[in-house]
Length: 267
Image (cartoon, rainbow, N blue to C red; front, side):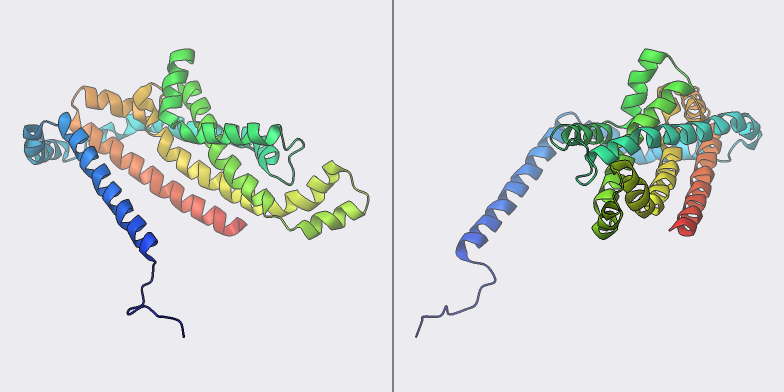
């Protein structure tokens, strides 16, 4: 008869020791991060923050509704920036997604790693960073914002789309291939119909996200509502800031509603 332990343990001794060491390392990391944060933090300013926030909040109320007509043009620019940027991102992301998917990549050893690198690079750099670089190259304006949103959208659309391509039913591909169809015909008749609902859903969802991002790209010179917000902040026109924030909030809520309705109708 084998010897049994006096008390059952969910983990072995080695696993428990590794778990405790993991917690110890996590606590040490937290303490180190706290010290790094405190190194450049002036706590007198932090203590005074509630009073400063209340003071600014009192200056922001009531909103300056007479400033609303001046925001219609920048609002239209923001919507155009988000729409054209999304369109650019879709155009660039579709071939990248097909090259990144295992079942559609024409050269898996060459094109697939390159496509995955493009997707990771696009997702790693925030749209504000793209806008800063493009404003420095192209100058301030909507063009820099459109390209920045397009470059940022490649990673989001490309990743979700290539995952949808890899999840297609292989039996449909085999059935079309058995008819003697070419590679292009297999893509057109077996793969594309399966991913179309996901494609439209991803595109609309990204458009909704890009409206939020385009609203702040003006802070770095890309135009739109963000430019008006930056000017109001620089002149300490707090009632105008409140009006701009309310317009951005209303735009985001409306775009979220439109996105949800469109995705529900498609999917």
